Image (tube, rainbow, N blue to C red; front, side, top):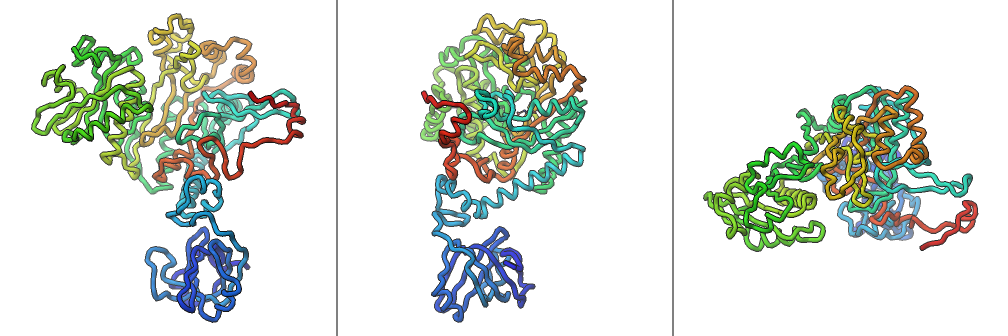
Length: 612
Ligand code: ASP
């Protein structure tokens, strides 16, 4: 027997017991004739005490960091107790020990505060995984997985696996492809999601499906993406949007409860996409704090419902005399609470921040709404006090606030102010990772305009249904965009989807839709996306065919499992929650993959490499 107990198990009540432990040597400390060793395993750390009668053996077989050690001994009360660890009241008085395996000197210390940089730890990920911090993350991941499964199982969902070697499923990313030896010149695509399979399962009658499943998307890896990632993928038949929202906010609340013992009893807020963009400049707003955007100009048609609101805007459609505002498509403001006393240096720093290429604004206008009620701005030349106060009122500025105003192109400016809002929220400590705030964002646009191809693309994916009351708009209008500059006035730009995203603390953690389930509408959708009949048949003939055999109404959702774990773990990075992640260039630096393959493999595939 290698061990009688784990290194996290023994307590003072075990004093006097003869035990055998096995684990890794974390530290060796020699004090005169006695030696202390901290022995670590997955469960904790136990102190071993070697006294002088083992010195001879220790001299012959010195212990080093990360050696695999087995020790027999008696549990003793420690004189010098360590209150920070659960085993801190005891130590093992070692009678015998055996080195089960030696270790090379590890390239970094296997401790909470390691001295290893990111790259090094990725290369030796198996050592990094020994560290407590990483281990806790993987344990959390497992807890979230189990909690989701418990909930879904209880609700009658069944886990059905779907294949990885498939044909492209369009989720808007590039496919990873796999050549087929048995079908030379032909390729499988790895699933961007199991989307079409889960829909087929609904047609097959499995009306509650789920899977915790890998998805593959060949995207440029922005800060925190992985080319393969995990989704909790779900689908239900005979449901409307409301059923899905209830079922899955239930799931997330249940995960909160099971994993974090959080009772999320509040009603999950709901917001339309239009409201989210209008008020937060973003379709995944962090609603842990306010700082809502003030809109100062009559907006473009994407904000159809907001047009009226702004008739009375301080800038209206007319000229203010300040060219930066007058020439801008949109002018947006936020009120940063309690920052009216910002110094020149601080405001300059913010100006530099919005001018960074990632944000790309030309400049930043400030209005200081002083505590005494007076206003002072960087545009005093153009606006009198009353006008400045009007601007301030649009973003609900109060005395003591610093009002930040950005002007420019609609999309860019909205994105910029949203980033600025998050930055200021962060600086003011309004984004606590111990606070969780859920939100449903609803009524997304069905289509997005692709400038590159001058056509519509599906905002979610092509299987998403339009709002029932707008099906006619889709059917009765020609999707062709005649005037690219005027695409916002095409009726398609205002069709809303039966789609929903779940947002947690400003992160999209899940998204889904009620699907199209009739062949005709699906064909119309494909056509709207520029697919002719032949292409439809070639790519999705199987699905269109299946729709003819009694497809039930259905809908679903998928949650980004890695991200959900990261947020629950209070971390920004999904990598920390994946056992073997890839780096930002999509490489596994431990395996050194991707890498070349043998000529023999090329020959078998009948592929000749001709790199450009
Ligand atoms: N397949 C979708 C996605 O991966 C989710 C869904 O519509 O259920 O985003």
